Image 1 (spheres, helix red, strand yellow):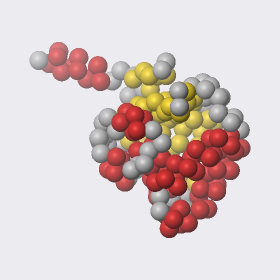
Image 2 (cartoon, rainbow, N blue to C red):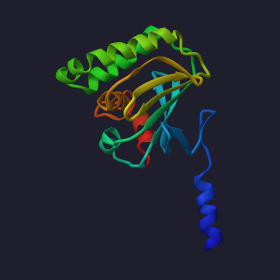
Image 3 (spheres, one colour):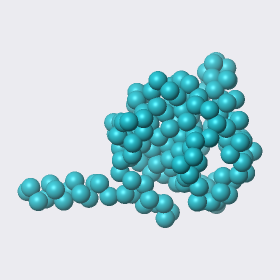
Length: 184
């Protein structure tokens, strides 16, 4: 049984691959080890747009638990096609509007504006780009593109939770993507 248990651990520690994109079983964010909760594909009409991997401190199949979880977290997007900055910003804005109340949107307006400015500064998201949205406690949300930090750190854990709602909220941008990310 010891050999079987060792094999089971080794099998779980393998990267997960989807659409040719590999997601490591664990990553480091803000000095904390995060575990891959799930991976999902974002499609728009017939087009495959990106693969997203969600890294969290504690795996869960419950979206609300993941959204409200404390500690460092990462959403890791791997672009499968080119997306211009305006389309990217408008997709994020639509996702936030679909999952937040007017009061929540108003309360987060400064952070959303900073986030949108960061996305616009990136310009076109190119096929093959790795775009990370990382939350680090006592710091905030940082956007990196291919390992390079972009824009300024956006304060507030509530902001990162709002961004997660785009993918795993009550009205996710893609139901299959939500299923993949909440696999636990």
